[in-house]
Amino acid sequence: ADDSSAVGPLYEALLALQHRGQDAAGIITEDAGRFCLHKDNGMVRDVFGPAQLTNLRGSIGIGHVRYPTAGSSSCAEAQPFYVNSPYGITLAHNGNLVDLPTLKRDLEREFRHLNTGSDSEVLLNLLAIELFSNLSSPSHEGTRSVSPSSGAGAAPAPDCVDAAGRKLESLSAFDGKGPTDAQVILAVNELLRRCSGGYACVSMIIGYGLLAFRDPHGIRPLSYGRRLAEGSTEHEYMVASESGALNALGFELLGDVPPGH
View 1 (spheres, rainbow, N blue to C red):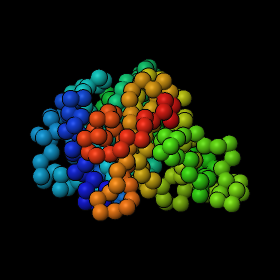
View 2 (cartoon, rainbow, N blue to C red; view 1 turned 180 degrees about the vertical axis):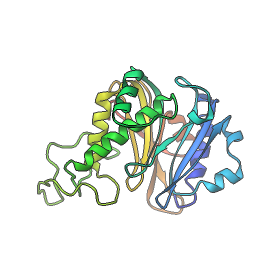
View 3 (cartoon, helix red, strand yellow; view 1 turned 135 degrees about the vertical axis):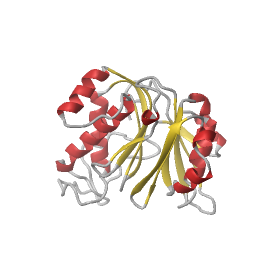
View 4 (cartoon, helix red, strand yellow; view 1 turned 120 degrees about the horizontal axis):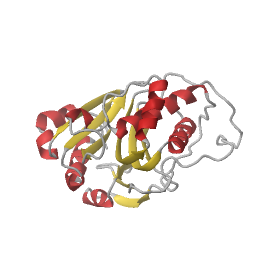
């Protein structure tokens, strides 16, 4: 979307998905490296008025409607959630994690603070941990391992190469920008290994963009599509828990995020 329109499609998509959750609604956008967030209990039309929508600036974002399956009905547990380190990461998810108490104890041992009983916050912190651990891992700049045809989070080739076919070795880990594709893929693969259950997630990372991934068994649905941006020859992309939301906004359905991707 252009610099002012991300919140419009997000709001319309949440209206199309209102039947999936009536407990709470939330939208987060990124504007020049800062998150703009509004969420509260209630239906989409009650949570978002003109003033709230105006303040959600930026060309990229995530929206969520909640039907509580874990935690409480407090507005603090409305999604999306975010953490500031590393980079700035936000996440919304649909599904349930198995063995949540064990995962929470693991997070406590890694000095991560959980403010709610939501398993979405657990997923977010696990992703943050794995991304942080990859700051000292090999960084494969110049490679693109994620594509619409293979699905978000597709596994990279054994060797990462540049455009000339030269193998890339370890580079500096953190340069103040967002993570590389290789670092994101490593983090998601480790999260998939640690987490059992059915879950479909959409995340946004400052300096990187949108990330979508799905549990290895594909229990929860996750579709993605694209449409031409208004007044442009370039495409804009959308990921949703139901393809109907894509169709309602005029997005061409490209497919489902494959299980474990």
